[in-house]
Length: 222
Length: 222
DNA sequence: AATGTTACGAACTAGATAGTTAATTAACGT
DNA sequence: ACGTTAATTAACTATCTAGTTCGTAACATT
Image (tube, rainbow over all chains, first blue to last red):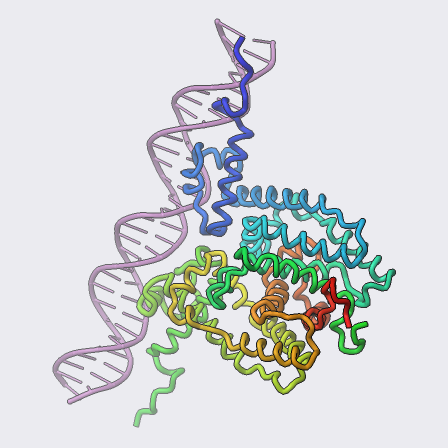
């Protein structure tokens, strides 16, 4: 006659505890960096104890890797939902750039984790079997858009998919990752709402302009 | 009859010791991040002792701030030497972009420091009186190039100097700062020699293409 | 040469920090 | 109802780490 235990009512719930540790840990690692984050601090910020971190993850490093794996996996999920192939090449690449912009805008904690991981020369990513083999479907998508654009004559620049991806990512990533030093030096918070729409348009226009071939010195823009 | 003390022979040399501490500290902070760097480690890597760090800099944080101040100041010195105003607008902005690329390519340790400082929300930069008021002459330079380009009709896009600076910086900075995660995920080291020239050309072409207005949807490229 | 000042070194300390031990309790299958 | 196992807690420890104490040696000044 007792009601079946609902997740939120249960006093012991491995999944819940594990998930909460990951959530809090992600926030702390993103805020303080890997070395700066404190296992005790993470423990205090949740309802369970430090022992649970070691029970489920074994070490600070393995917890950090688990955080990275979760964050990257979620981001890949979002990427899979991008659908721009019904658009003409120019609009397809412009829209992809703008969606990438939105995506970076919405996942700032993830960006911090990536920045932190780069400071550590990606040593943790390389230790993760999950992440080491995580190719990205975005590259294929860009490749197809580039092919279509070249075939249609819209794109004059012979571009490489990885390069184009880097160009789009760099703009979107930098705006968020370097907001603080940039803000301190130039007195402008690039992530403030009043700059958002303009910079969003800018990425799209930049990729399109580049691919159309307007930047090359030999061949003047058509 | 005793020979005058030469810098290298002297057993005590405040300037030298101070400089060596800064050098080693910069390397260590760039390698391990602020929290990850160890004062003892820095001390072991030089000929003097940990006591000297506290003698000259007072605390780990003040040492770190001193490292930032030195690094930023040196970079500003290099920026002052950029001279592209004798060129026509298109070539001026292209050259500026390419020089910025070279600059980032040559100062990777500085880039790491900036990335680290962003993880700490630029709190140390803000504590430094030297850095807080360090405007940049590059912005004025870009502003003048943009004005000239608009006046001559070469640039159709009404761009903002800070935005253009951000676009150039983001590409150059990201290539270096994110080389490790990017390499791990896409299997390409963007900082490898074989990609250098191509990507260098790419920044220049991208800014020029954008400023010519080739990316806008309303107005087709001229 | 005497004296004061600046630069330096070895050893030490208090507190922080990752990781552990071992006992305890809730859930679940039978 | 009951034994088994998975989940959880509190208290503990070894080590590390930023910062200090105190004494000394080199240089400058007179």
